[in-house]
Amino acid sequence: MRGNRSAERLQSLQNEILESVARGESLSTSMERLCLGAEAIAEGAICSVVTVDAENRLIALAAPSLPGHYAAALSGTLAGPRVGSCGTAIYRGEAVCVTDIATDPLWQGFEHLALPFGLQACWSSPIKAPDGRVVGTFGFYYDRRRGPDDFERQIVETCVHLCAIAIEHDEVQSRNHRLAYYDMLTGLPNRVSFNDSITRMTARSPLDFGLMLIDIDHLKVTNDTLGHAAGDALIAAVGARLRAVVGEAIAYRIGGDEFAVLLPHCTHAAQMRSLASTILSAMSAPLDHDGHGIIPSVTIGSALAGEDGEDSVTLRQNADFALYHAKETRRGGYVRFRDGLRTSMIRRLQARRDVDEALAEGRVIAYYQPVIRIDTHEIVGLEALARMRMPDGRIAPAKDFHGAIVDPKVAHRFTGQMLQAVAQDMAAWQRAGIAFGHVGINVTSADFQKGDLVQRVLRTLERAKVSPKQLVVEITEQVFMGGRKDGVARTIAALRERGITVALDDFGTGFASLTHLLDFPVDIIKIDRSFTASARTGTRGGVIVEAMIGIAKRLGMETIAEGIETQEQAEWLRSMGCRMGQGFLYAQAVPAGVVAELLQRFGRKHASEAPQPAGIIASAA
Image 1 (spheres, one colour):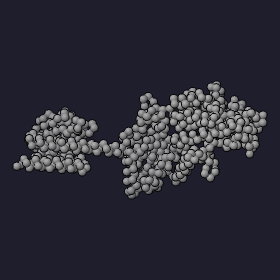
Image 2 (image 1 turned 30 degrees about the horizontal axis):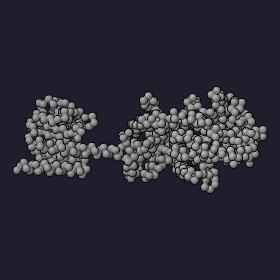
Image 3 (image 1 turned 90 degrees about the vertical axis):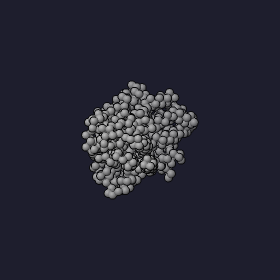
Image 4 (image 1 turned 180 degrees about the horizontal axis):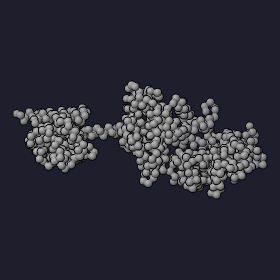
């Protein structure tokens, strides 16, 4: 009769534990229920559930009837071949029964932990996961020297099975939680965690925290030049460095190249500025990846709860404004939100909408600045400069929308419409019998990255029935930062093979300009206006410009000086061997119709009538 009642109680305990797991109670709560229930059935036994961490150290998960000091002493002990009953059972993967703790060699060095509490014997059985891993033990302690009886073996068999179910369920839940709330690459909390945290923090009073948004600079360049494994290494390094320096703050990875930091108990901007300085310093150490040195760089924008926003949406938006402003004006630095940034961002968003609408409605047009032969003042070519015709008829200059075409997709579409506009204008001049020499058009990193630049250019020129030899593709040194070197080199070579001239624009303003001339041979270098402005004998700028002209000449390249504004600059450049130039001394950028008149009056075939520099615009008026 007693056996039947005990079996019923064991079945009832099993149902209770399964329900506890199904209800989602914590693992420790379920295991405490199990221990207390087993102790009620197996009179005289004291139960424990021990698990192990990743380093195989014991964790006293549930031991409600064991003294707290004993459970605390047990936790942190490394499992091994002679580490009591539980540690040895985990190490061996089999049950270990010690009937006399005082004398058994498995307890040597540990007996002093158990004996003072009256624990004389211990039987420990391993708990195994479905894949065979030992994930813990279920133990029976006795207050006298003995082993288990048959019914206790039945109890333990059931309890070990229940432990395995509960632990596996907890592991699945933990794994799902990590997938839902943590970033696998960095181990940091993810966007979902961030959204939950900032919502909670803005709901409480007082609002005493700061928000930082952090972008990795030039991650795409790393991906394109060194491969995505290098990009992942860079992201992981930034995450690790953030975690190491944020202190009580919490770092999150909230996007591909974007991180966030929530700084609690922050009521002054100086606290955020100090942390930002620490973060920027931590990022400056080089990172080695497969023999390639990468120097991480980040840009930071911040907003202070309360002052800069009382709800999570406003606070996040204002920190975004600060970050975008920092990326445009202080890349690799830190900017805190201020009211004026919102206005600036709204203007940029409006510019993006204007560009999208102009592209959709075909309102992207080309203005042209003449390229002049300095010694004769004749027009030998043109540079096409982008403009937008606004719905009210106003012509918007490039500075009004330049920031909106930074996005690669927009830039690619924008170049396409500019190509069409330029090809159509060239075709019209050609049909009218107007000689225009060559026309330069600027292309972007996005055009190289897309991989279809050569085909697009040739297809557009072919439709307009314009010779490729009359087009100059102008690239800036930023192109070399935005794409793989071999891909850029192949594209440049393919353009030149098809008769298209390639010019390196704004020469001297980028990193390693001379190296680019070695790696990417071009036909023309265009000297940046910042050098032209200081082009005179006896100045450092003059020495540099003279060297540029000399290098180009020796490499068989032509030079065009940009931004010529005075006759003195023009004369000095001519004396140094620079044959061509452009700038306000000669002409501003003008519409295609005005250019046609200029070409007819002052083009190459009318050199004898060429006016003095200031006369071109005056004559066209």
